[in-house]
Amino acid sequence: MAEPDLQEIHDSLFDLALRAGDMITSAHPSTVDTKKNSSDLVTETDKAVEEMVSSSLKSIYPDYSFLGEETSTNGTLTPAPTFIVDPIDGTTNFVHGHPYISISLAFAHELVPLIGIVYNPFIQHIYHAIKGRGAWLTAPSIPTSHPQKPNSEEDNIKAVISAYTKTRLPLRQPAPPLEGLDKCLVAVEWGNERNGNNWQTKTATFSALAGDASTGGRM
Image 1 (cartoon, rainbow, N blue to C red):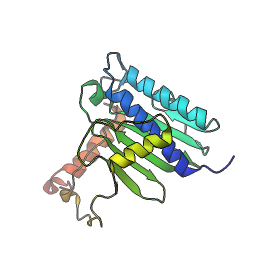
Image 2 (image 1 turned 180 degrees about the vertical axis):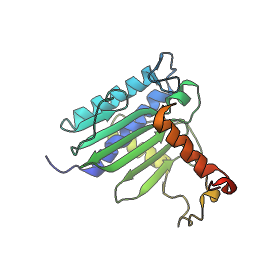
Image 3 (image 1 turned 135 degrees about the vertical axis):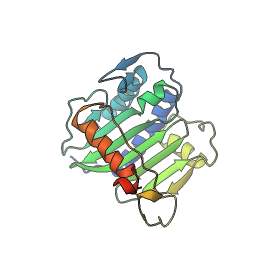
Image 4 (image 1 turned 60 degrees about the vertical axis):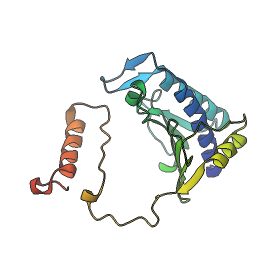
């Protein structure tokens, strides 16, 4: 098998993220299923986006593996070239109409993440990176409707790039030194667990990070 062409794969994922974004912003979720609990939801849009991404990637890269949030519940990452997809990262927000969601796409080889794309189609921010080539934010200077997109992948990407501004991350160059957590915005990915060791570890960690210094915290 030939070595993966990272730029080509990046561009394919970039285009798929845009297509998925159109599906997400035009959807009106009506069928909502619960997986583990009320914080762990899945909609018909999650499934449709993952199917679109999966089938598109398999047609371009038939020999590569695929791990999807909705269809690979028992999947394990191997050294093989692998696409990793969360079709709607933030389904609970999506269901309740909060525009803080993204489609998250990645590519890994030899267990090393090489490409990542995170796209919030509601605010039209695309975060994308190739290992060793920097991380970038591509977004409109002023939020507008999405530019008209042609059918071809190459023209699709060119249409977006020409209408948006591409900025190297971090946004502040050079990045200021981190003096301490009291100068930071601290956030937690709570996940879908609401009991057990995983939940207890997360709550204890957040308490230690966000607590006042007089009580042993870091704020």
